[in-house]
Image 1: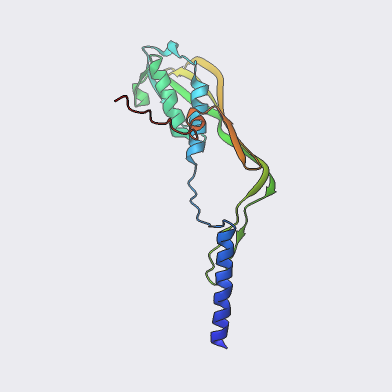
Image 2: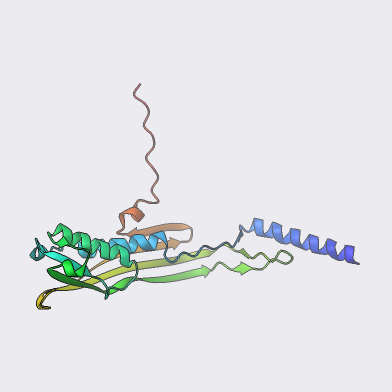
Length: 214
């Protein structure tokens, strides 16, 4: 009885394995970083677009400390670094300690995040358990039509005051920038729209090598 049972289980496993191969299934293996490279590119582009055209020449020649303790949001390090770079390029003399500064500039980010939306008309990918092994397999997604939209928005504000007296100097009205990646699929035809240069050219084929002139 035990030998017969093992044979039946073996046959069942072989049938399921062949069915998985025929249907184009794949083993589910997930890696879940905090943010993907695509999301980081979107956020970085939104930050660059927000800072584009901004100048802070009124800080030129002044020892300036950048206070970022009120600055919160995704990809904070890149955004704060970009603002510091822009202040320096505008002529501010950045100092590492507040007591060394003539001017303190407080920066904040009312918005620094992403929105994602997804619509699928068709059959979504589904995980199916496999007896004996216990390893799940995932069926392929069958989309008649779908879109995946990712939109990043960065909005910054800052104000400056004299370090010693605490006297108000100047505020800058909030300035913002955005970036998007909109992906579409109609049956099996994919296309995308984006304003991120690295994503715009990512799926293009490299130019063919030209024949040598020799």
